[in-house]
Length: 196
Image (cartoon, rainbow, N blue to C red; front, side, top):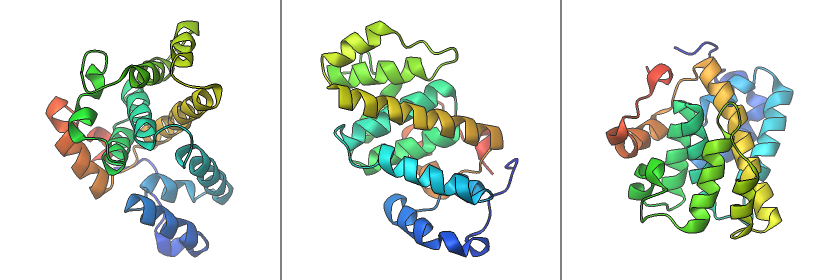
């Protein structure tokens, strides 16, 4: 059970255009956003930031989802792991690659640029933060400074979402749960406190 229940869409008609847009992109409306709607200014601000950070950029969309999944896995947020695995699959990342994420250092499914980005995501999402100069030396071999900013922004956005959803025990929606159970489940993923 969530520590704070999300509002229903009927309770927030002023957000219906935003929620319709999110639903068109994701296939559902995240309960995290319906909880944020209790503070309308927060939801509006979050939606703007998420649209910029998660939207089109100079970094491959699939890699951005994998970076978010890695950060969420390192932080331990199963809600965000489900969302980002579903996002990665939806962006065309092969399910096998998503399933092998934690073995990115040795899996042949990953390229050197992806490994550099995933190393940063894994280490930056930990507390204390383990990102150091060596991460950026490696990133500079594969990404320009704009792309590095985009990767760090993605990790940072999910830092907020990981804390938000794990603290509130946000209840997982059906679509991302089904993907996570299928793709991450064999490696031990369970919804934990985000389940029914």
